[in-house]
Each structure stands twice: as C-alpha cells, then as structure tokens.
Length: 205
Image (cartoon, rainbow, N blue to C red; front, top):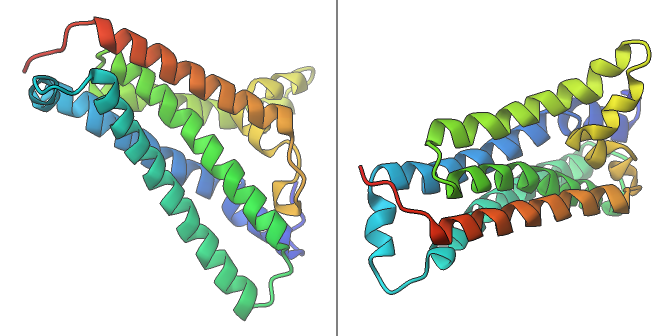
C-alpha cells in the first residue's frame, strides 16, 4: 500500500496505481479497435488493401499510430507531474518519473497488442475492445482483490498489473524480467496477428 504522506506515495496512490494505467490502456485499445476492426467491418480496409501496399504494412502502421497515441498521452501525464514537481515541490526523482512513464507505456502497449491480435483475426470492434479491456480489469482484480483471499496471494503473479508495478517504478526500481515478459507477450501477439491477417479473407460490409 502506498504511503500517501510522501510525494511518490501520493502520486502512486492517486495516479499510477490505477487511473493512468487504465486511461492509457483504454486509449490504446480503442485506437486499435477502431482503426482496424472498425474500418474493416465498414469496408475501409478492403479499399486500402486493393492498393499495392501489403496488409502487414497497413496494419502495423495503424498499430504504430495507436502506440504513438499512448506514448503522447503518457508524455502529457509526465509533463503535468513535472509541473507539479516544480510548483508544488514534489519530492520525486527524474529517474523515477522516466521509469514510471516507461512502465505505463509498456503496460498499455501490452493491452493494445491484445486488441491488435483480435482485430487482425477479423473480430468485430466490440470484441477487439471488450476482451482486452476485460483482461485489463481482470488483471487489476487478480492483483488487488484476489490476494485478500487466504491462500490466493500467489495468483497476483499472473496479473499484468503485477508485472508492471511489482517493484517501485516511481522510486526508480523496476523488475526487468517482468517488463521483459510484457514486451515478449506484446511482440508475440503482434506477430501472430500479422501472420493471420496475411492469409485470411477480409470482411466486406
């Protein structure tokens, strides 16, 4: 539990333990779901695929745009915290701010990559949004509430929230292998989704 009497504890408790991760992940999931699933079922992707541009190029371009939107949103949060650090004398190190921003981006990218593999497989925008968001919420429950049950504490280790926040990123302490797991699973989802999208038929409206 974060010590709200300290600057880092206040920021973790009010921003980085729930609000920012949910916000960034939702932005990324929505961007992927809309730009890939939504455009496919509305017929816009079919028109793009008719040009001499490969499917992976188009899909990965849209994935990159979603990642960029998450990164810019994370930088906006960072800028607001930096202003607070300057004007309200928040005692938080630069290393910690950079670390927590990187962790938040990787966490959100993991969930948007789940949306990508579903969208690339041809699911509807409702499915490619709802499933990753359910993983997001379920992971939070798994880390925050399930361990309150006797004997269930170890289940938190299966939560992406635990992988991202197990240590103290705002204090500059991150778990390299846990973040590596987020990156590895994100990359696997992108590769799988791209390979499936290359071979399958495109939905026509």
